[in-house]
Length: 295
Length: 289
Image 1 (cartoon, rainbow over the protein chains, first blue to last red):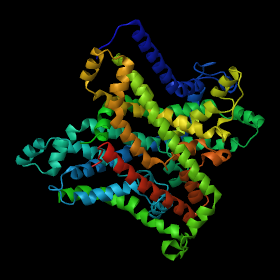
Image 2 (image 1 turned 180 degrees about the vertical axis):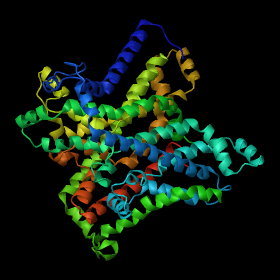
Image 3 (image 1 turned 45 degrees about the vertical axis):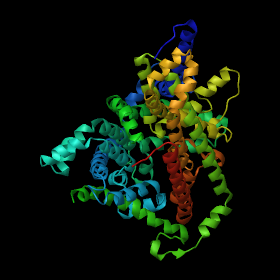
Image 4 (image 1 turned 90 degrees about the vertical axis):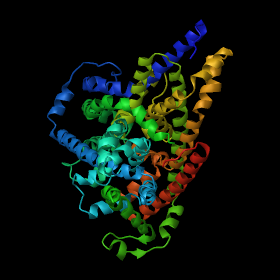
């Protein structure tokens, strides 16, 4: 691209960069504010003094979390859920995407399966029948209730299927002539080639499981077995009652409610995502675009 | 044979957790009583649906859902386009990728976490209100005000998701032939003219595609977000179909009524998705499979 070097164009580029920095700052502001609240003293927070710098720096809220067994129990359940649910999601996604990526001549029933799968993505019986099936199966209050109902992420299956379709036929034919069966072709050729796409889907799946709070609310009644996001959601339950209070009562309530501690808790809950994100995000652009634009 | 075997585990899961619940929609036409089950409960014909159309709440919820969803779709289309255009002007690679990474981050956070943060920031003595007071304005109960709740939902949703949209548009921009810019510059076109006549038309297919596909979402105003931000004071403007169905079905245990509303939504959504997919394949050449 040709760049003109006049003063005017330089100035406008500077303005654009400033605007970008400003928007980016707005994007980060709530997170930065929450970090600062978590490391400030409660009195400073309640006095409304904490914006983007800590006031009366102290880490006592993090110390409190260390001793909070309920928090860590919920944290472990979320970790278990991500590992178990993520593994099931990925295995089923790969196993389904591969046959569906075959042409109808190679796999005659392909389109029938495809219609069923797409239909389940577009139409659902609604939350009440869904809940009843899960409860009839006796899954309530078990980790399987969090993992099995979403075992097949249909959107990801289609994403990966489209990626598999783009793999050159010649690779497969060569392997086939060498005597490899479908399973071997999948394991030795398709999976290694699809690493960027698989990384993207893995990130989606991990984030999806980690962030889900709703199934924990309705499918787990035992407060000892709820995942982390559900635990955090219930911390803020008092908000509902809070809104009915008068302004004075509200201010009183804010003095007792532990904003610093809750901020620290939600920040700790973000750590696993922040650790995984940088490793997988470089594949994202590649993975998303390939899934979005087809043929 | 191997192919069928590979599909089997996934199909079993889909059958149990997606297809079996579809049969549960018969509850919408029953006076469902859990103890009697689907086979023992009495039929009610269309009673649940007529009740729905008579209930003023139901109409309000439908309107809320539409207004919130359309607002999110419109703002969620404009902001990423503008942001991608601005970002496209920047030549510093590191600057560009850093900004992209940062604005994409909220997309990966749950509405529980963001809900807690936003409640803090928008609360009566939170950061925003302190700032308003600093400017000499009055404090606003954002989360308890029927005037402010919808705009708040729309803006915060756009804030969370615009980074994701930006990536898609930037990808569309990289596909534009650089020779077009070169010849335009030769002819004396300014950056602004180039943007108007090359970049925007280049993005057009992607804009059309995302725009038409979002049509299928007009009844999805975002359960997670509303659920984590709303409260009884803003039911009037903030309650959407999904949150209403949740409260009716699982809290108030009006199973048949909740299923009827859910079914209504599913059917309309299904039709909209089919239409939007048709439009997308006609005007943007998009095919899922």
